Length: 169
Image (cartoon, rainbow, N blue to C red; front, side, top):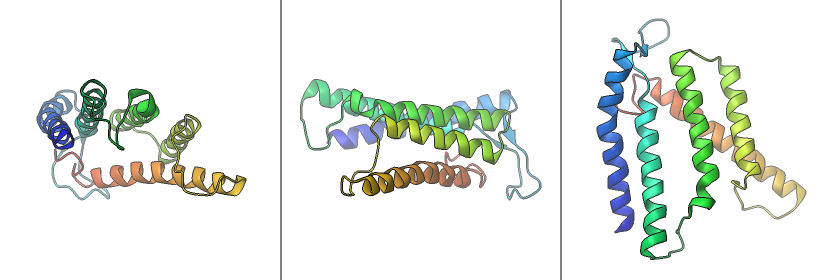
């Protein structure tokens, strides 16, 4: 029941913040203009990632607080200290996305920043953990974790480049 409540809150935060963010994007001319290799036919507002980020962060924080103050410790229980590296890493990725939306950043610079964020997260303890605890096992886990973080970030960015599909704007 808690999970459904948290999911609904995250959805509602994203759903109601996207139109506001859309207006802000139009107001400050943070727009993706059709042309070149872009497939959309009309001007599309950028910054939709803010709404998705807000929903995700509110959902994660509500879940952690509900578990902390209402008990109900389950095997999926979160605490703020354990998820702090994820929250911080996600915030850095959001900031990178905003800078890219507003001023533009080369693909190479974005990749380097994403790799740095993934390595910072890994050094903070966020890492896949399924290989034997050997130097090779640890190396594979680090490589796969970096690939996962950077790969998902770019997959989401690619999806969003198709006419704002990621945020629904």
